[in-house]
Image (tube, rainbow, N blue to C red; front, top):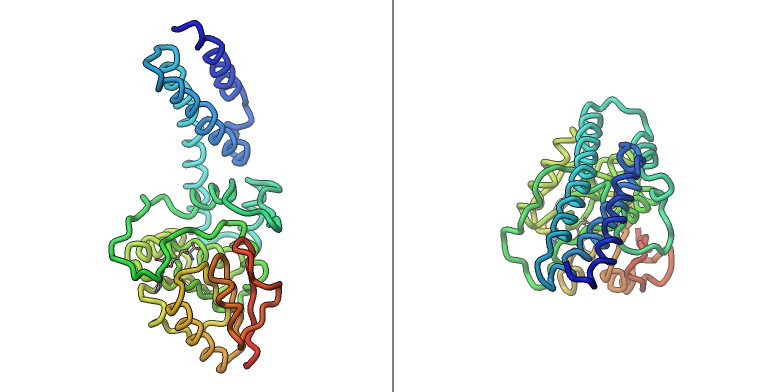
Length: 304
Ligand SMILES: C[S@@+](CC[C@H](N)C(=O)[O-])C[C@H]1O[C@@H](n2cnc3c(N)ncnc32)[C@H](O)[C@@H]1O
């Protein structure tokens, strides 16, 4: 071991010891603390070890890396067991109204509350990603038109906000461009609403349908079609996390305009599509100028 590395290795070993000694993170209920510890292991301890190892092999660092990876595996196994049990509980259907909100609160505490202005992904996403499915992530299998946007999931706290503002059990909710299906599944679990996901990519659609079926969610369905060919006759609330842009988005908005002449509808948007939606003369945004990509906007029709 070279002389200069000694203090760094001592610090790394102290960090690892503090993770191993933190009894709280090994208790199933402390998901949040465990998620923070896993992030710390990845981005502080392992990254640091790898950085030091890039200068040449070192036995003490290699053994510290193995030790911290063992600690990480142990923490991840606790989550895998937790999520498996929760999936079984959801799929049994034996849970009262409000169960899902309480469940999230139990494992994440205040981290689970929607926080205005808080952008990006956090422990709530880690919880939702682990809970909703244990399938390997699918690869896209067909080419995309240039106006179609690649898959990126809506941050979980935005989906919670959407569920709170948009849906009730009387609504039929559509996610246009539903990807791996988190939005329809979570909105159903949080509100009981009938939900539908429309997705162009068959591999994503199959994944989403398998997740809903694993959770035994009878009121959630995924339809594999291009959004412009979808059947929206039963829809009352529509969500778009920028599935496409330009003419394709304009075409979709014309379809929703036609729907709005038949019944009252609400449209929620997130991401870069919001300004184009805000330019439609037949729509009015109820919460601001729709110019911020990190804000969930709600639009109502002026012509229905
Ligand atoms: C930004 S992602 C949003 C995913 C999902 N709504 C979520 O929040 O987790 C956009 C999704 O729209 C899908 N998409 C793009 N163009 C589409 C089209 N014409 N019809 C249906 N889905 C489309 C993409 O495959 C991708 O999964």
